[in-house]
Length: 305
Ligand code: NAD
Image 1 (tube, rainbow, N blue to C red):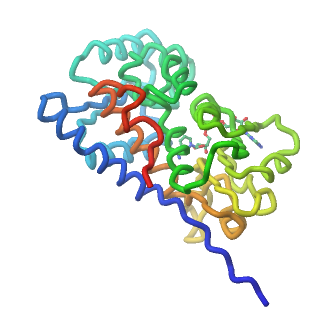
Image 2 (cartoon, helix red, strand yellow):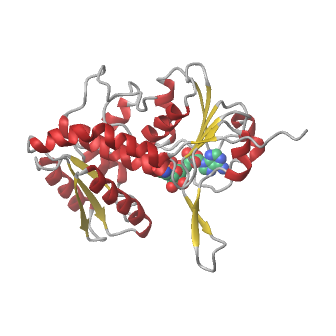
Image 3 (cartoon, rainbow, N blue to C red):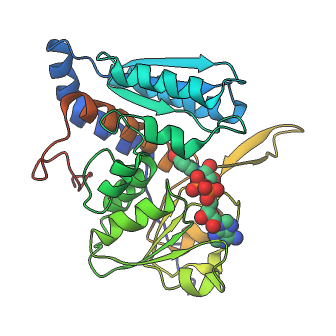
């Protein structure tokens, strides 16, 4: 007898993003009534082509959430002092409740130094060291993509306590914060990166696999444990079959090979991406109303079954 093909739970990021918006709609209404409409200002230096898709997503997100949103563009040849001045002006502007420094910056500008200039209470991307440190405790304005990955794992219903979690990718903005947040849930966390030897031996042990690298097809079917939960953070543009010059987006996971083996998986597009934008909006709302205390229901866990 041939076993029927297994159907994994597709972790629908758009549905999760909608539920986050609905959950926070009363906060937005309350803030507007109080004359404190959350206002996110994105500062870009030049207009990097690759960043524009994220900016379009943010604008759509802000519209859907009813938040005020503006992109300010400095000339591509602005020096670091000029960018710092622009950030300080936003820090001082009481009407601005959220600040995002769009990446990548033109060469020669110090990304970290500039991110550190952002007022941590307006740092809605969670890139200031104070907020990155918040990942240790799971509170504060936490990095949006890391929050999105955790929320999608929660959506799968997997029990994290004692689970083997493998995170592939150790960037400051995705891999490390995800690992820290999942340690906070008492998972056993392994972090792999480009210098890890025998990647497959690690990924095959994972009950929960989070991949944030930027290499299409890095994770193949035989690298994943049967019944695992897989969160694919990667976004890669690859040539599409639809004709010369046409591109399509894929993740880091070979979806067709991996999906039949696993219990739950995020699609690309439509997985982590929309939830990242929703988390950015959520952080903008939290920044406008003040970070909730640890026992507030708006803290983690993020997804209620
Ligand atoms: P990054 O370039 O800063 O980090 C990449 C990480 O991958 C590094 O830790 C590196 O050591 C690791 N790596 C590289 N080659 C590897 C290999 N062969 N095996 C194992 N690890 C390897 O990237 P990032 O900013 O963390 O982003 C990672 C991916 O996630 C990118 O595709 C990016 O576009 C995507 N991303 C998506 C969202 C979203 O909202 N969906 C948000 C941020 C980033």
